[in-house]
Image (tube, rainbow, N blue to C red; front, side, top):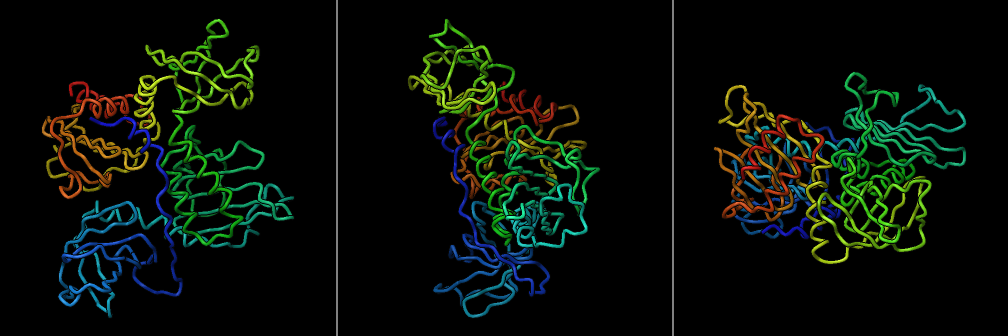
Length: 475
């Protein structure tokens, strides 16, 4: 049985270990390379061995202390398991050269999906390493009383920073992979958006009118932005504040569900059953709409009931802050049954809230029927929904993955798998037997979480949503 408490804790997971990344501009190689930590490979019957100098074309591995080194043959293909931080990739390499205990390995026979794994890992790190300050004199400064600084890198990445004459940072803009982030000391904090296709350019600023801002920033945008900045050599004033804002937003992502359509309310016992609309909710916190004429203040703990659909949970609300007509604070659900009910409500909606469509896999499975369309949505951590939709709108094949679970639909059969390390690559149609294990039967809780995640996602296309719900309601 899926542990709903474990799922909620997984949703609030911490960031992976920060890697040390650098590139050397003096190197003139076919592929740019990254020197990084926490990357390793297992192959030739041994390992894991530390990997460094990773590139699109291969990597360097250190076999120090391993007696099997003498048996490795150059220009011979070997199957291996490459782990890049939390990403595991089964691939094939050819050893091209050996120097002492170091071996240079080139990727061989890579599928488009495998190449995408390596590219997605390397690209934001390469972009981060490429950011350099350039002369901003050619650009128009809308606020001449402030000094504007300009940093530019590969793939159109740019950072604009406005400072006072005393060096205080007051505003920043950050462009990367068609995402846009802006922070203003006098504004509302970090804002994240997507640059409209017709406005995309590799040079100079664009108007905020050319950006579609998200109500809730996508997890992918925050993760990519953080990676680019962490891997850069930007001065502290050009990255520290926006990294802090990204980290704060990521922390909220894992906990806070933005409530829609007034489906959750808090009824205060001491005020004659006054019903307050819930704006956002987490396992330990809540924000309510508090009308101007309301007598509620930040002084007292308020006993009452949390209304979620048809469920009524005994709870208490301890106000902590008030802003405009918003009252926020701690939520204390009274008993274990109520806490479980809240977990079952929150978990699938947190998963759904951050799903974002990304390019579908370039390699179609051999069993794909003519005219079938593929869709891919990714979200928090390893969460993803991969779908192959027939021309009639039915789900032909697909997968829903989150935490350590994966539901696969194929051949009109729904199968559940366990993936202890959560290392399924979203673009792979097939599940590697070395990564997942089938579970006898299908856990009803896994199906329920998946169904409610699909139902509550505002990003999934209607045809994909209908196709999955037809399967999950039967399942």
